[in-house]
Image (cartoon, rainbow, N blue to C red; front, side):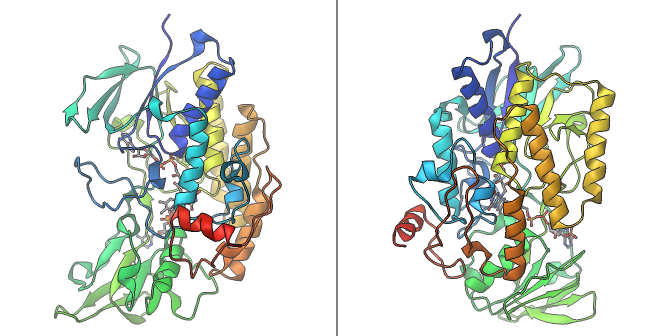
Length: 463
Ligand code: FAD
Ligand code: NA7
């Protein structure tokens, strides 16, 4: 009997956690050789890191692939680092001392790499290879995967796999709604996926559509970089933070327009009948589950939810009944790195035969119970409690070895956000795993411009 062959798609935090646990357990001798799967990890970018790799590119890349990156310059963590910290690799271990609770993107990327380098994972990833199609062949009882070598601009011969583990992320294909008149709007219209710098908003009046994390950050970053005003337009409910005076909220935009003459501005009308003069439109309207390379019957669809339907343990794709396609990180996210990590260890245990699946009926019932509970979960507190239970359940099932419940940190973080949305990233938390109290940041978030790791570390040491 040959060992199971696994196709792992994507080397962001989720995919790398799969490689991490597999290698860790292999080195610990915890997997019998006959149960050790043969994993091929394809990553279309030129490095591991997923969304945490910054790119200046937008649209398509040099190989004609859709640009994966949705992160912009000046991105500081939106949750406290203590809520995403790996218990077996703390920030203190990585940086050799305490750092503030809300690091910039480069610092978080550096931290991820520190953990991956423990097991020298990068050589296990086939970079610059984009998965083009995944089909399940019932006759062979295998997935057939076609991959493109981007550097050679060449489709490789199809390969057969027993399992596919999809870790391609779901904050990369923008959800772009239409608003009446938008094709005649005289200013720039962009989705947050394509945002790279905030400097162009200096001196401008900005409309932000959306009422979630990207909308919040767009409003604050625009103001931070000199926008004169920001109007946020919500579909369901306002964010309702204590905004600076230059930020306001309106119900849904119904029409936009303006004057085509050079230099003339635009306007937006809202469902309450009010109007605002605006120069730029930022669509902070979220992302689509979009897996065009997966065969129709294997594709997860739908909105960004805490528990997408049809996934046992939020992970095993139930439709079709072969249970050998897995999705990691497909959830809406409070927990991030540790949630992916618990999911990854669960996946590794399943791939190596340590976890056995129950019957199809039991799996469907289990998934449905989570879906039903998620539907009843409305407030931030309920959502955090829901995801905590989800993560802890995965961790318990996979014998993770640490209690990943950091709900108290999340509740406190929500309180800080409600107190003052402009200062919550200046607050400090205590690490559950190192016991370390974070120091205050070198500069408050609303004043910090240089987002480089070098500057961040220097400013920590200056404290
Ligand atoms: P991703 O990071 O998206 O990685 C997926 C990988 O799959 C990519 O490397 C991609 O190139 C690859 N891939 C995709 N398709 C293919 C293909 N066909 N073939 C081969 N490879 C493919 N989380 C936080 O914890 N804190 C934050 O502050 C935070 N800020 C965020 C800000 C923004 C603007 C966004 C969009 C997200 C943010 N997140 C944040 C959440 C983020 O989703 C997770 O932190 C994390 O990156 C998800 O990891 P992942 O591996 O599941 O997906
Ligand atoms: P989210 O959290 O999925 O939020 C999307 C927002 O966009 C949400 O407020 C939606 O309103 C709104 N939306 C979606 N479609 C429309 C239309 N048609 N009209 C108006 N508003 C709309 O995405 P984010 O980008 O904020 O965050 C994703 C990740 O990136 C997150 O993990 C962060 O860490 C960064 P709704 O409330 O559903 O009515």
